[in-house]
Amino acid sequence: MDLWERIREYQHREQQLSWHGTFREYFERVLQDPRLCRLSHARIYDMIADQGIDSDDMGHKHYRFFTGELFGLQEALDQLVEYFQSAAQRLEVRKRILLLMGPVGGGKSTVVTLLKRGLERYSRTNQGALYGLEGCPMHEEPLHLIPSTLREEIAQHYGIYIEGELCPVCRTRLREEFRGNIEEFPVERVVLSEMNRLGIGTFSPSDPKSQDISELTGSIDFATIGQYGSESDPRAYRFDGELNIANRGLMEFIEMLKADEKFLYGLLSLSQEQQIKTGRYAMIYADEVLISHTNEAEYQQFIQNKKNEALRDRIILIRMPYNLRVSDEMKIYDKLIRESALHTVHMAPHTLEVAAMFAVLSRLKESKRSGVSLLTKLKLYDGQLVDGFTETDIRTLKQEWPDEGMTGLSPRYVINRLSLALVKSTVPCLNPLDALRALKDGLGQHSGFSAETRDSLLNLIYEVRREYDELVTAEVQKAFIYSFEDTAQMLLNAYLDNIDAYVNHRKVMDALTDEEIEPDEMLMRSIEEQIGVSENAKRAFREEILIRLSTLSRRGQHFDYRSHPGLQAAIEAKLFTDLKGIVRITTSAKAADLVQEKKRNEVAERLIEYHGYCSHCSHAALQYVGTLLGR
Image 1 (tube, rainbow, N blue to C red):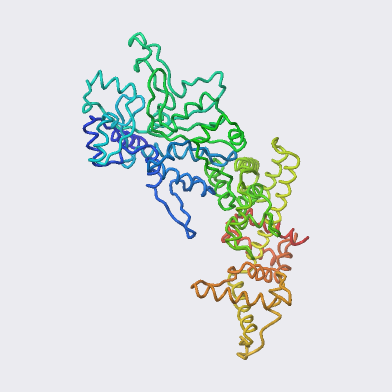
Image 2 (image 1 turned 30 degrees about the horizontal axis):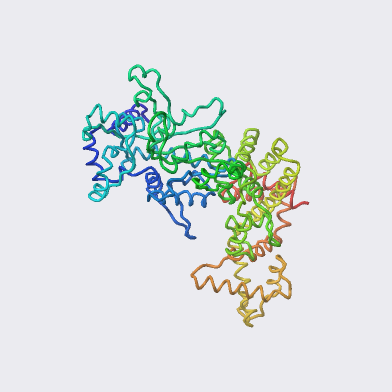
């Protein structure tokens, strides 16, 4: 990379973004591309839609704009985009404050940051280009120069919608500098930038005694009063409040409900009438998206206060709970670790998974339905097949607790503990047991947990540990079988042949003698007994398997040993039971002979090649499984 060449290219692109002309020239551009004069909500919706919208097999929409940045917030993002889509049509919903409500670390600030950074990038493209009156402190839409009496006629003739009036500064300039000649009023291209305070404003409440409303609406420029002779002259006023400079773009009101009442009053007219009351001037038009965020406790306190009814009526609320899918939670941790200096540390398989399981379990609520544990809910929410449950059951479970996910451990807590474990690690990788240990130790150091909450979380740690024990044991046992998938499928095929003959009162062909023999009852029962299928229930179970096989065949889908959760558990349990003695001796022997050592190394190599282990964590997993099987 040639740094100086890249800098020259950057400077060249910046020069290309610069455009200056007259209002007449700008109007010609608008006639060619009416999107230049769209309002702020429409610009943000187009920004999201222009990056593409995908749909999955379930018909859920996925917005590429948020891809790779936000995980597990699909429902909230759907509501967000639907809001902008409606507001882009100039419906009444655009005259509302968008309030994101959820627990700390739930992604509220990230959503707003993505919109702000996205607007900055979009305004630098041809599709997102926008123009403002040159010298206007609010970089307002140049079409405001057109007298209101002509706008209806222009809308009918050109199809151009014009909303808003000139700010006091531009009204004075038009009168005194240009003598009312709108054609020559200068126009420039505007590139939105939070750093340069162009089209993106941010307000954070602090001590109401020291914070002044001028931060929102600007203030008098006392240095120029002598020059212009009056405080009511717009040239003697700095229209540099956050609400002023956010015109044409987005205004973020950080923790809006923590702000003093005097800061909220101005939002009433801005949201409903799109006007700002500034100094000694008439109401000033402003076209901007108002977005804020808060937590549930502050929101509940806000809505219970009768004095807030007017503002509450102007709020669109979007709930943003914690993610409840383990697979998405893992993506959050993976993203944060990759962005840190610890991205080179190897993460043993299941490390992020057990951390994600613990976090998600802490957010789930006990089901009122009998026989549904938190772990069952966790698997169902993550899209895993659980025997006896359907999509309808999952929807019913989600409807039990509408506020599920609004409490629990935040991703920040988990990533902080994982980061600490990574820093302290003396080995080249971090394994699941180290992760669980770090999460457990952190509970005692967290001042916000009550004794009851800490005990509850400790129980979840133990539950995740048991689940990991089953996962790693199955993984190691599979590695002992040279081709586990093929072996499992062969056992399944033999089982299917036998139950088909049993149910249909036929015989099967013996592979060695080519003679017809009775179905192998011993084989069938050795598999079924692994999952508790009783003698009385065996026929119903076998019939159900054949029905599932027939259904998948009609759909053109292949039936393998994983197509039925119960049968998968039975097949694996059968293979592992037959293998258990060999695995235990090989993995737990302290003084292994040459044969055992060779087998152990072969299994370690398979764990490395097929399951993502490294040389260190593969042998650690073998040793751990040996300990488990030796109990």
